[in-house]
Image (spheres, rainbow, N blue to C red):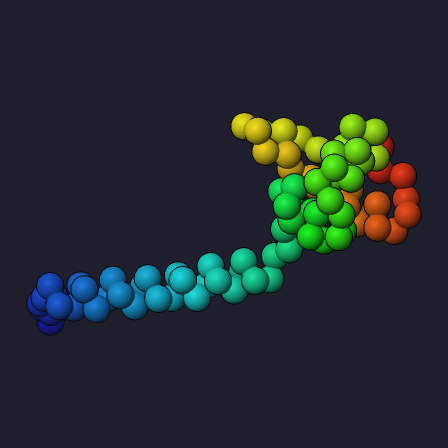
Length: 90
């Protein structure tokens, strides 16, 4: 049975390679997976509406949201339904 000695340089090289490989995998998954929830600013840009119009949609119940720590979050599927002209009300 052969004995191999692993040096610190070998471990550092392995560490760097592992981090690079993981970064590539994570980057691909993030690029492939669409967002499931959007913040208010993202929704306004997507729909080309003002903050007050978004607030009106939220208050009327046309576009439901969840508020977490002062930030409103909207489900992407609700936004898609709104864009397709379907009723979204919660």
